[in-house]
Length: 200
Image 1 (cartoon, rainbow, N blue to C red):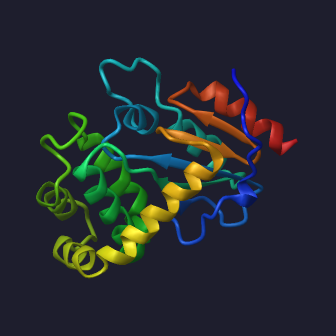
Image 2: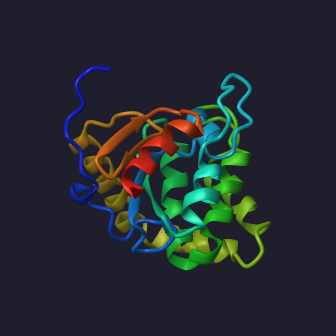
């Protein structure tokens, strides 16, 4: 499996990033993704024809996040084009303005994902339309916030990318679970065994 650099979640800067679960859960997962990445879509919601692996995130949430054992911190590793950047900027704005709708929004973004790169869904106009359909989100307010705080949000994206590079991650989806790293869209069982090893 090659040599894995020693990783430790404590060395990964995750402050201020979107997360789900209890803030002080015993196990933390840092999860790097790109909203245009089909493997990220397959991990979060499934439905990517060429990737048969069932989504792992829903089961991790049901069995570990909802039970208070795991916190998932969402990190941005933007590399597939301008739409990826746009989506990641919106990601920060939604977390800031509407944290309670964040995960619903994130799921909607992945369900809407189409072809990789700057094709179809994923530009600002299409994200604004999606936002308008989510109850409790003011799409115009989000669009204005992204525009006003672009530089601040971009700095957050750059920071997440630097954290990924520091631990040797250069593709998505990628996970640091305490002191283990998983890179790729794997079945839930692989995550389960790693998470369980830290809950003993």
